[in-house]
Amino acid sequence: MSNDLKTYYENIKKPWNTLYYRIVWEQLSRIHPIINSKILDFGSGLGITADYLSKNNDVVAIEPNVVMVEMRICKNGYQQIVGDLEQLRQQQDASFDVVVCHNVLEYTKERNDIFKELYRVLKPNGVLSIVKHNHAGRIMQKVVFENNLDAAIMLLNGGKAEAAYFGEVNYYELNDIEEWMSGLDINIERVLGIRAFFALHSNNEVRYDTNWQEKMFDLEMKVSDIRDFINISFFNHVLLKKIR
Image 1 (cartoon, one colour):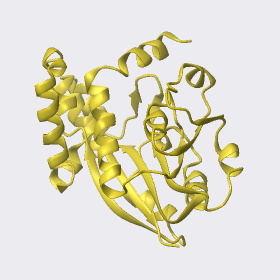
Image 2: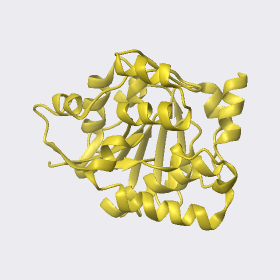
Image 3: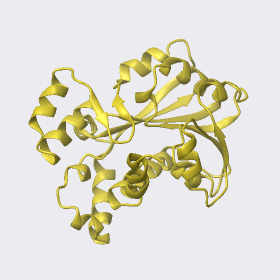
Image 4: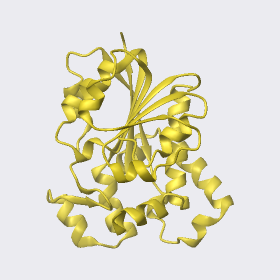
């Protein structure tokens, strides 16, 4: 296991990461109450979302990184598959009520193919949850949190960002998703923001305060559906619904 991956695993339980997952899950549940559903988690990583959703659902997780699969969290039980697009292609048509693909498409050149496969395996009226990096949000973090003005200028000039543990981030936008949707019976239902504020806070100690966590969660949820804050959030949560 690389030192970077060890650090990633250790950081998962820190409050800024637990708050991220809490927001994602709450946003998803408000759009589509998830219980007794068949769910696919494509690019499941350490299994955090797959494990959470498997409390009340039947979950299949697909992840190409063997080391991450070996380290994964699996308290509640779900089916884990080691693989990538080829394993996705082996899933049956219209077999999942919900498909999640969180922070995955930034690291692959097969985005269009993956999107079409995620659509294929989704049941009619099913929900596709995509979490994506937001370019403006990363620039905000570079300036406000890191005080790294050179990096911010580099990104504004079209330079490449690097994500800890995963390498180069190849950003894509809503218009890219709309292009992938062309000819498919699927609509974008909502676009929400994640991490408008809490990733910009330089005081790590206050983040361990449970009262602060609750207030920050409420604040993030309140602004997650407001366009001005969505535009500067670190992540965007795109929720789509298959028509038929």
